[in-house]
Length: 84
Image 1 (tube, helix red, strand yellow):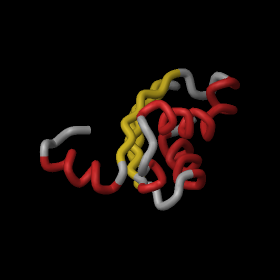
Image 2: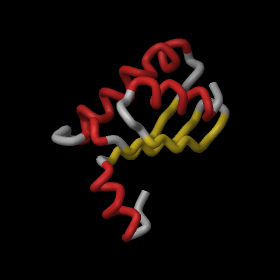
Image 3: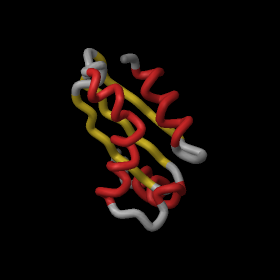
Image 4: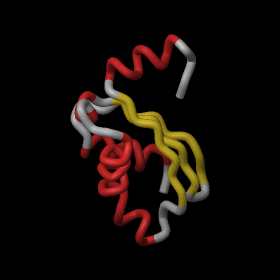
């Protein structure tokens, strides 16, 4: 699976998502910024992403994924501190 394929899956499944994907060889790090995360804690946010990528994880096309998830307001604040 390529970073672009992961990005397409996440952007198609999460409203107005800004997605950044780094990595290769089945190991990736993603950052997803979307107001769809508003009101959700970390675990439900991760479950949303795992749900979208479940088939790829099950098939082995995607071996490991780390993630950082933000609402737009959280990301604007995090950028000021150069986090994520």
